Structures are given as structure tokens and as C-alpha cells.
Image (cartoon, rainbow, N blue to C red; front, side, top):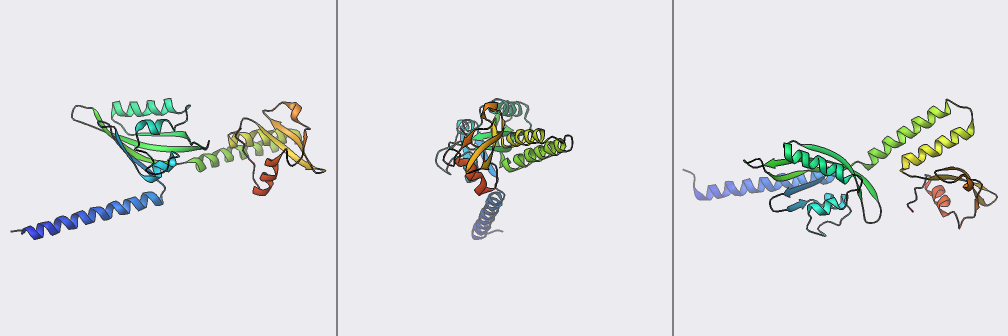
Length: 231
């Protein structure tokens, strides 16, 4: 027969193997920058990994997470649609995918992609929800930049007029950066002169500013990239 010491040793080996698998999974999720959540619907208890906390703009373990803590970080324009997807998946018992923006306390906006699943009891009542989430902000930005470049290229090949090309450039750049307004300032005789605008009054064109009035232009030159300003 099987002795108790052997059974205990087998149990200990099994527990050690489980801990090893969990450690490997944790490392894999961290390396892939994947957030995870597990929501016990009957008790309301929610478990997030550290990546999940950070994706929502929280410090890890800074609070005992709840559904409401997730919801208050989702962009107000995206929350109704996202919650509708979740409710439908809960009722129908199917998996779901959603993309939505989150707003951090410092004003940063990030795009996240979540994939979730519900478990139901014998009576068909949802008792658990779990899933994974990834930050897709850079992917979204690359898509917008690609569309902007294609639109600018089409304009360049459709007209010889520099003014039309410049207006297309600034309009598409604003769209790609998610800005409602944009302006191009040129450096001349120690001053910045607004040459083209998008979303601003045309009266702004020709406005002259010194370095103290236009610090963002100096920053754009230093970074060699357009600057998006959140007023």
C-alpha cells in the first residue's frame, strides 16, 4: 500500500509544482505587460495583479479593488458601451472583448483592450468574472499616424498649392494627436510667428510671440516632435 509519508511527500511535490507554475505564469504576464482580474460576483471581492493597478493609474495594493474602482477610471464616453458589453456577456454566457479609454488622475488618457469571461452556477446565475487586459495606446497611435500620413500624402499628390498642403498637414496632425486645435509657429527674427492654425480663429495667424510666450515651441524643437497641450 501507499504509506502516509509517501502520500505527504507526493502532496508536497504537487504543491511545489503548482507554486512553480503560478510563478512562471506571473513572470510571463509581467513580461507581456498583461493585466489580470478575478471578480467574485457573489461576494464582490475583486483581485487585480500589479499590472492591472498601474494600467488604471493606481499604485499596486493602494486599495482593495472593486468594480466601481475600475468604472471610475473608464472614460465617461466609453463607460456606457463597455458596461453594456459586460452585461450582455453576463446574461448570454459568452466571452467578450472591449476597447476603452481610461483617465488617470494626472490627466493621462490610455487605450486598453480587455477580454473577459463569466462563469455561471447550475441555475444560470453569473458567479465569477475574470480576464486579461493590455495597453494598446501605442498601437492606436500608430494607426492614427498611419491614416494621417496617408491623407497628407494624398493631398500632396492632388494639389500643387502649398497652403492647401499645410492645412492638410496641420489638420491631420491634430486628428492623429487627438487635439481639437493646433497651430504651427515659425521662427523669424527672434520671434515665433503663427503661420497656420486648425480649430482656432483665423485672427491668430500672424500673431508674434517671444520665447517666454511660446515655451512649447522650444520644447517641440528639443524633443524633435509635435507637442500636444492639455488645457
